[in-house]
Length: 346
Image (cartoon, rainbow, N blue to C red; front, side, top):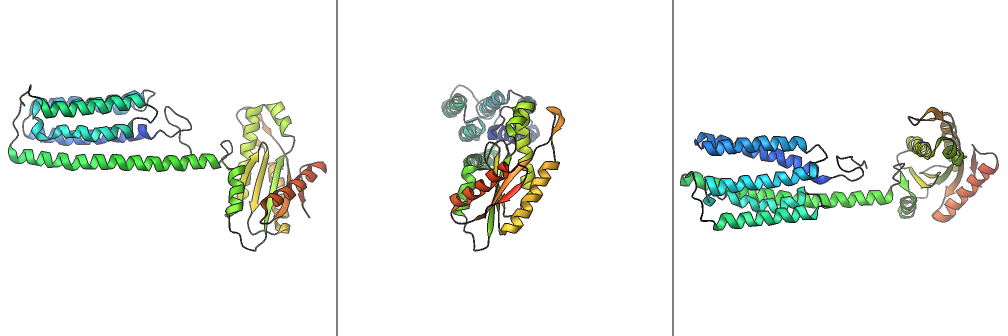
């Protein structure tokens, strides 16, 4: 899973900002259609108003890519409400049904405004409700233009159909957002944030839940040698780069059904599916040599960072705890015997 960076957030994909940009483009298209119709009917005051709003929407769409994105979203909704009220009250009257669009703006508000911003949601919901009530009950304005009955029926039908689409689409987006958020939370709970591999909890859960056949499998435990010295010499930021580098090498080393995880600190685990202890030892030796000759390159320091690892190998049994314990004993023996080597538990 990749975590997108947005204008305002780093590790949180802000669904609302992206949706509001799409919403502004939809409004632009709707305005273009209505401008064409009103121009054909020679309703020039409406055409002028729509042109002004189109220019504003284009400006807001551009500004939605800046740090003012949250404010822009609220302004976009307010201006949309204002345009709807002007059309349905001042220009062609509430009989056109245009004011019903304010119903669709209420659920849209809860989609396009970030879930962290409660008050903008409440403000927009209240404004939309007041606008709907005002348009239904107002007796102050007489509409400037009189729309023929057949065309008025077409407008009402269009409004009802598009309003249903807006409400349905808003709730569909909402439920998709809930689903995406749950998936994101699940991934975050199962993934090591720094190295982007599985964490200890996810690794152990997978091993316990997988229904493995009688084929032999193996577990590798890998520990970076003298990792504290790397942090002391180059700094913790470089240490983090080393951890990410090691995890990348391990992922490239994996077969399709293998599993790699960071158990904590500088310790990693690798599950080798359908692998004998002899083959696992050979592959572990290859991984050990690859890490030894492949330095970590980072912009933090011009000097490449070389490191070695100690690897313990054991057969995997259905007793996950014992399997890990055996691999840990082999890894500890590799360190005792001089590091940068592979030891199999026998």
